[in-house]
Amino acid sequence: MAATRALTRDRVLDAAVALADDDGLAALTMRGVAARLGVEAMSLYHHLPGKKDELLDGLIDVVAAQVAAALADRPPAEDGEGAWVAEVRARCLAARTVMLAHPWAPPLLASRSGIRPAVFQLYEDVLGVMVRGGCSYHLAHRAMHALGSMVLGFTQELFAPGGGDDAEATEAETEAMAAALPYTAAMVAAEVHAAGDPTLGWCDSQTEFEFTLDLLLGGLERARVAGRL
Amino acid sequence: MAATRALTRDRVLDAAVALADDDGLAALTMRGVAARLGVEAMSLYHHLPGKKDELLDGLIDVVAAQVAAALADRPPAEDGEGAWVAEVRARCLAARTVMLAHPWAPPLLASRSGIRPAVFQLYEDVLGVMVRGGCSYHLAHRAMHALGSMVLGFTQELFAPGGGDDAEATEAETEAMAAALPYTAAMVAAEVHAAGDPTLGWCDSQTEFEFTLDLLLGGLERARVAGRL
DNA sequence: ACCTGAACACCGTTCAAGT
DNA sequence: ACCTGAACACCGTTCAAGT
Figure (cartoon, rainbow over the protein chains, first blue to last red):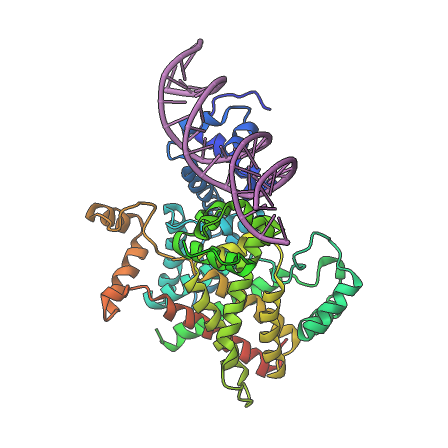
């Protein structure tokens, strides 16, 4: 495509991110990445001696760097009582924004065994905010688990349409679902009715995410103040 | 291996689960599953007309059935004020037990787009418990997101060793980490010291899971009682 | 009906060879 | 040094053929 000026590791990773964004993780092949760069698949191995594993790790590093970049130009932290909550909250929201931009990232993270140093640095940052904010290491440790699993787990669409390929469910299917899943059907009905603008989708996962985030942060701050943990 | 009596869909799925348990998702190939059954890969297509996608969906159904089975022989629910919390808690713990037995399940769930009917039935069950327990549909909806993301996100080992293949980190590596990640290093030190039996691992993820679960359930019950949402 | 052998298109990866 | 063509082992899948 573009005049192939100097193939570099970074150019390969950028192409891989673009390919995954466009076509998903399953389409991310060495040959596909190479094609996007107007080059043969075998050329990539010169810049990624660790082979495809190194490419996948590199993808995680790119995502981690995007989270770090989003946090880089934030105003310095306040330091009143409980101010850590807002700081941690902002970090979780930044991470989520990046995950939404790269929906392949959570499955990729989940599929790989080790933790990348760049991801450790993100944890370190949150950990520092909490400890300086008066949280014990024990409480901070638990927060990392709670918040980490939420940031990584929240991409999944909970109530996506069945397994079909159709965009629209037929009336018959809807009725069959209502019979088999009465509570679910009632919930959908209640939520759709409550939603102001149905075109936005009744399941506003950003709102859901922030609700859960605040539930966790509130509980953690209460635990800190109570001196438990 | 075993005398190949009547290849069936269920026998194929059982073999696939066993293969994934033993060797992981990446090793789950049509040829591999067939080999475990002493049969040619092409034979599988007769029992799984939907091809490998149907096999993967079938794996999810097996996991969902295991969760349902674990819940089937529970004593009937109490119905005091707030009794729904214990019921939902038990369901989340059952789901987690199954996920731990099949660590390939959360990545698989995350990688597939639609929600299987069997999984919808599990949601429906939790939803019913909450609504009968006095939760609004709105609150119950948020609970599904919060709890679902936790159950699916909590398999990931948060502080697994870097990207190396060595089981032990060298002293030099540990020191390098301590320098780059002071808060993380201090947290590990504090937690290892606090742990009674270091051979159990300082990062007891069952305890972490239950802590987060109770944080969420506590917040949800407080919201219900307060009549918010 | 159920199973199989050969074959096709596609992977990741190696290696000897080009410039 | 960087890139490539041919090749190998392995996938998912098709299809015509066996029983």
